[in-house]
Image (cartoon, rainbow, N blue to C red):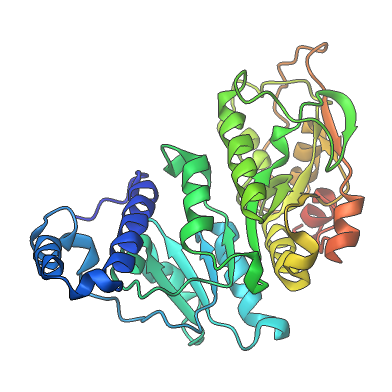
Length: 351
């Protein structure tokens, strides 16, 4: 039975990937002419810690030099991004490689791309086993922190090992969260606003540390508002899974963004390129903040949630109100705008 639980697969994979690159470099130098080279090769072939991954069977979808866009994390966001890249004329000559931590959902993911031979799906383990020195021109890291022991290190390793770097004109995009902002009492925040102290808030701190690694590597950061679809998001949790009430004040501010719009923002960052995005941070939302109560009122308009009732908000009334995102500058730089301009409009269209 395959293990589909969140694990440290990406972490260990990147560590081994780095080790493999170092070994490969050594093997292609003058050392290969030394008699000691054969002892090294013998060690590699027999080592139980290396042979199981470095010489495993390659997957059917071989990675080539034309597989030049990598999407790390093929969940709801990553799947939407892959689909949009494949449908976008600007990327019509590109092959898109989706990288997952396990193959458990591969059949389901492939069913959504069954007619597109420009889509390659692999795991990090498979990618390592096929490694030939090739890196990807563009990389989007949209895997959440939950699957990692050390999120910042995983992101750093992805930029160092999988991305060809800004010198080749490519872009590394990291999908972060607006939750890293310090503002809490109705303040307007933008790309330059202060972030939380990572030491005082370890949960968001791991994202702050990951952002730092991305900026230092020459990539860009997209801080995303709260993501949603009809079936996913705060509204679904509050209406279906909070019979005893919702924590927080009913007028607490919430900034939202549809998953498809989050994906289109990533594609926009790739489209404008590293000359525009390198070492920059962007703030992405639909530009129409709402409240906890407003979210539920909007959702109740839809057919999907019409049988549910408004939950009780537990407050307290003097609790933290939240912050308002202003991503106007990001929208202009990326030449991007949300398709779903508000959560209320989206839910009204579902009625």
